[in-house]
Length: 199
Image (cartoon, rainbow, N blue to C red; front, side, top):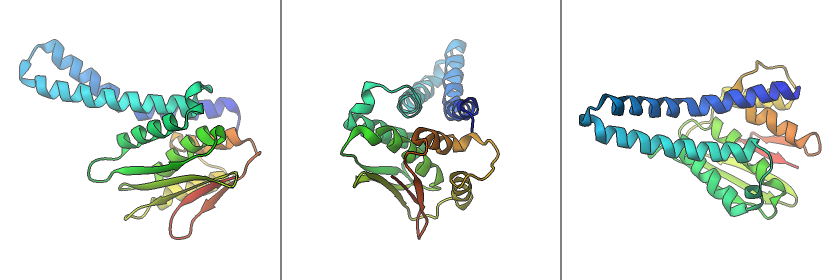
């Protein structure tokens, strides 16, 4: 896929993932402008939650899709950023937790993209395990609920070079392929779960 098409996919995906909270902030500001103090507690809550989600997601997207920066050289920062992002897509009843073990910074951006891909297939929360082992990156999901078979099927199709509609939700998969640039291979784990091995 050409780079301009990949850029379109990434921009569309990022926009989709932040527009809801931007709308919530706009609604809260509108209520403030109306001056009805009966809703002040609701406004405060909306602004607090939405600003946290926007900050966490944009920081994650900046590291995963943006130009290389010093934060990618800080493994602890990468882990904190990934966990904060996962908190924005999980919830109290069905959280998405992460166990990330990297030994070098060579896989920091790749790990973020893999985490995003795996989180997308979780239906009702779960646990994502990502480890750097023998110069490879292995990632797998654990959940009490079945993962999305349709999304896994589409991811597999993309990885095998099949044609697919330019659905922005798969931007992390396409972008990961571009980052790896055929230097490293992506293999899927499908037996009783879902995961990816990079190397």
